[in-house]
Length: 194
Ligand SMILES: Cc1cn([C@H]2C[C@H](O)[C@@H](COP(=O)(O)OP(=O)(O)O[C@H]3O[C@H](C)C(=O)[C@H](O)[C@H]3O)O2)c(=O)[nH]c1=O
Image (cartoon, rainbow, N blue to C red):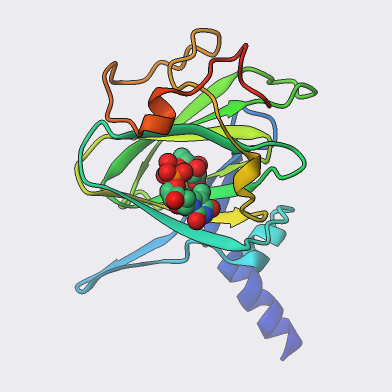
């Protein structure tokens, strides 16, 4: 009995593959999307599947971000230490260009950014370590980004780095995005408190 349960668990591990991304500690997670005549089913996150890949991630919050228009940009957001949050980010409708920037002074990739195209159909997700800024720009209308977040929401610890900061120099696909007032007036690298 144990053996079959164990082999069944091993079989399930192929439901998810994990690759390292260029920002230290960040991962690209590819989950299996089961398509059939009704639509699809995706195992977006399962603690054991990630644990089997030596990834400990225990979400405390989950969020959806619905964006009606293409070129809507949210970011670059983070919570100041010690309130950093690990984020598992995926796209559950539409398509987005998702960006992380390393704000950890002791990291080998400090100041570097990396972008991943996320879409509902792809079944991919990015695991963004605490201490990184996160943002995205939508590539289609009606794009919803889903987050699983490990780490309490502490409003007073919330910080924003300008999306178009010239030191980080993220190569966004759009130069004139739709922004919130908060993001449009965010500080640059020199003024940002991280
Ligand atoms: C983040 C957060 C927000 N809120 C409330 C606060 C505001 O009244 C409202 C909208 O918040 P905000 O305008 O900061 O939402 P976004 O601009 O989409 O920010 C998010 O988008 C970027 C890309 C992220 O990575 C973060 O998840 C988050 O900062 O939700 C909460 O109640 N709990 C929360 O954890």
